[in-house]
Length: 264
Image (cartoon, rainbow, N blue to C red; front, side, top):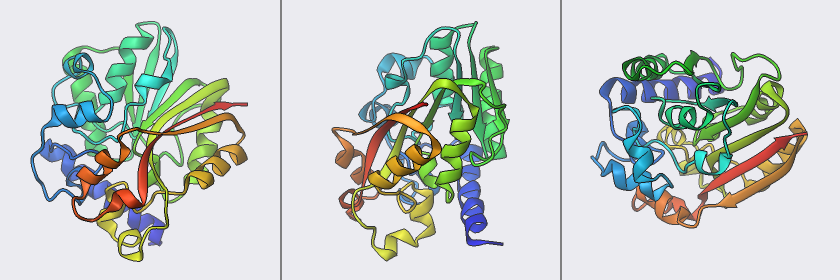
């Protein structure tokens, strides 16, 4: 098994455990490795990364596990009737928020590589009677989605987990319609990561070790064909990241960003 596949399997196992336990997270990291299983105030964590009380109250119980690093919905500008794709949809939290904005004439698709997460999201949707959202098992490097079929792609702290980000951005470009847009929240590197962080599997699953430099993400997007690339750090990024791994000073090396782009 290659190192890339070993990383995928480690991450898949960690997030499967979260799905099966119904674990609450600690921002992006959760029980994936850096919080030590400490229970947290899920509402406070979610508000800190950009969600409103109304949004938190209008999703199925158990869909929000505190696994994000921002709120991509807040800047996506979703419109009624659009088709939205969520990369790494987890328990379905952002999908359920998106479905409200696109309405019954729209459609939301969630893709996740962890069978347990897909099962949880489907159960959440079924309990709530949602018929404009679906969840598919798949890897974001090989999306189970047709060419030029999606208006908007969202993602919340997931692309950093991929060992093949160039493939991810090419896949995003493939499935977007001409003029389609990307709106994601993710962790990027702002300084070179120390080896003890970069090669720590727990830090990989915690959305830290796999972070790429801002300029490298911008280049990958441009190489894939994207235009109107905008990368904006969250004002409270240091607070968010610091809370994931207290005492490790990871906020000196990575930051939470909103990343936007348009298919040229």
